[in-house]
Length: 279
Ligand SMILES: [Zn+2]
Image (cartoon, rainbow, N blue to C red; front, side, top):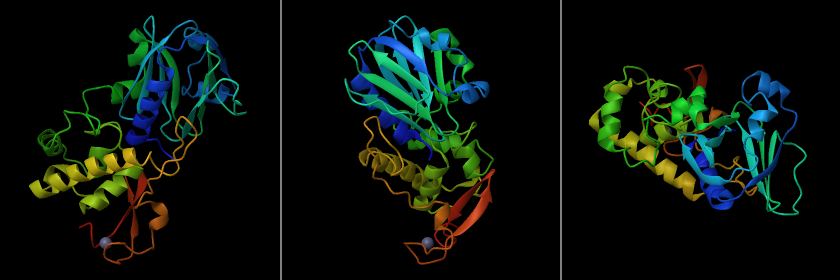
């Protein structure tokens, strides 16, 4: 289960309204040696202890990275990219047994973060943020799908500059948009009726428009439905958006035209398409 832009955005909105003005009383790390050795979690408890006594000023999101801004130029950077659960706990409510980071606030509420796959939990001062690859990737000039500067014109121009296939243009470290993962990518190009191996720079005007519309409409729908069905929000609620194209669809029939869906190898992963709808 990956957390993509819509889910990260929903989490950051919930965290912003729930956590702003709360002060950290204590922090605890648990069972995270393996993740620390891989660099997914900041290496020392002392990294997180810098948050103690600090107050949450705001929670913001770009791409699929959530930045919790604390007073005195401190930050908690969270990216549950390939699976992670961030939960808020009211006073006196039970704390789950499994977590990697727990922050206790002075009003006796708490936040827990659990990574279930690749992702990051980093405590960084403002002047250390650029040490994080995910921060550099998602907090750059690359727009997220709901940003004001994500327009058809800017998107079309960026596509023209990419002489690579659409997957590489839209997902990963060199993408022209922040926050699309493989799950969103498959639904987007299916909606747009475009083949994933098509070169980004060779799309027609009409295809650029279809792709732009598909990204905007998918993002809006996922935000309105509380994210994907596998996603768990800050309050433990599952999202209601059912992805349409995903690996288990291979061999099933396209809901639009009835053609058998096939699975392609693409960019180190897989991509399901309808060979009739996506030429
Ligand atoms: Zn079809």
